[in-house]
Length: 101
Image 1 (cartoon, helix red, strand yellow):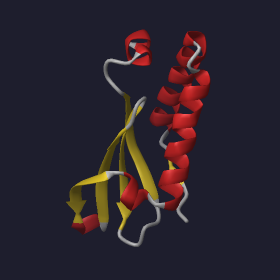
Image 2: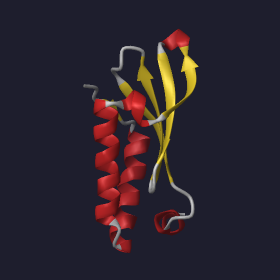
Image 3: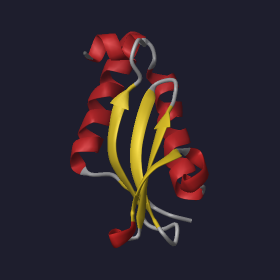
Image 4: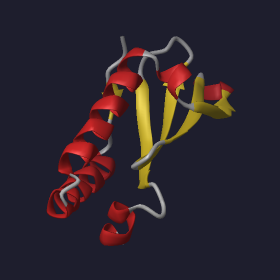
């Protein structure tokens, strides 16, 4: 089981978007998206997203996952641990995307 690493910039985005989601009445849906992301990255990161790039020299594979609220870019070490969250974006054309714009 991996422990995903979230850089400060990613955590700051998620916190800001969580506040906006709460104001829109989407707080619980947003928190559920975060729970799914964290559990999936912790338990089965290689199956959760689509591989997009091998970084053989670093023994990492970069993955991309698009969900109903979040798009996640992350890297997984060849042995499955650790998992690095590289970036998160809001899924376009959603109420949260337009409000956080």
